[in-house]
Length: 289
Ligand SMILES: Nc1ncnc2c1ncn2[C@@H]1O[C@H](COP(=O)(O)OP(=O)(O)O)[C@@H](O)[C@H]1O
Ligand SMILES: [Mg+2]
Image 1 (cartoon, rainbow, N blue to C red):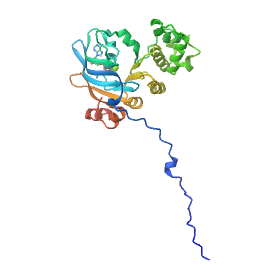
Image 2 (cartoon, rainbow, N blue to C red; image 1 turned 180 degrees about the vertical axis):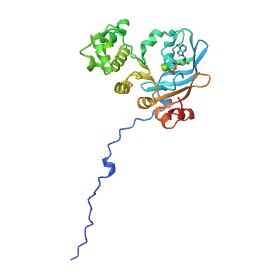
Image 3 (tube, helix red, strand yellow; image 1 turned 45 degrees about the horizontal axis):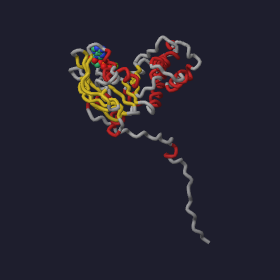
Image 4 (cartoon, rainbow, N blue to C red; image 1 turned 120 degrees about the vertical axis):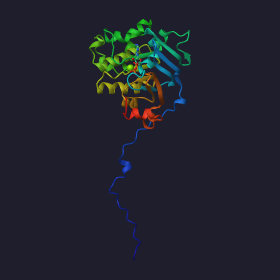
């Protein structure tokens, strides 16, 4: 009797390729700037040092709870721009700003605005870590003490150090000088000091440029973590860093007149993969700057 042969099922000799690939991390959606809630709105912001104009007619919005990078060649006005956001330039003789900056809808340069109060909401971290020549504890407690903080100061210091991803490294040496820490630890100490006054925004002007790659990596990780609770603006001349840490990027350039102008602003992924302006393209592909 002839029986119909069962079709033979040949066992596969290769595991299907798709099954071998590690699962893709869920890609974060590319933010669409126009749909986000704003921490700052900049309109026609211009800035002068004496008679020299450093910024011309900068207009864009900085969203809440995202990381916004400001990139561009040296001297294009990145630091000037970030220092306008907490009125830090007011301290420079001869400085003058034009245009309009709103912080949560309020004019930061208006007659009612108080720069000291404003800076309480807007923490700042600089290029070179600048701990005070005081203990780790006193560095972090400094701002709350000045503000007359009446809660549990030890708990606040610990919480701030934890948020800055430094607690585990300094919990046993809170009394040691902040200056005795490594460069990367000093920068995280400065971040903890900024966080201790419970700000809403963190401004960082090239926070990693004095750090080694490992310390830089830790700060970048920390930035990713902090954006859940803070709006972060970071100036960086390192484009890889901007593409790693930021959601949105503003590209500034100073032309022949040496005034910084905004060339392009948008979602970081779009700006780096599909720039709209040929000057952005030239910059990100390393053709100048
Ligand atoms: N305190 C200052 N006094 C006078 N000019 C300044 C001062 N700070 C910056 N500038 C000038 O403003 C321009 C922009 O500088 P800056 O904002 O520091 O650029 P960036 O941070 O992109 O390197 C430069 O021409 C610089 O020389
Ligand atoms: Mg600068």
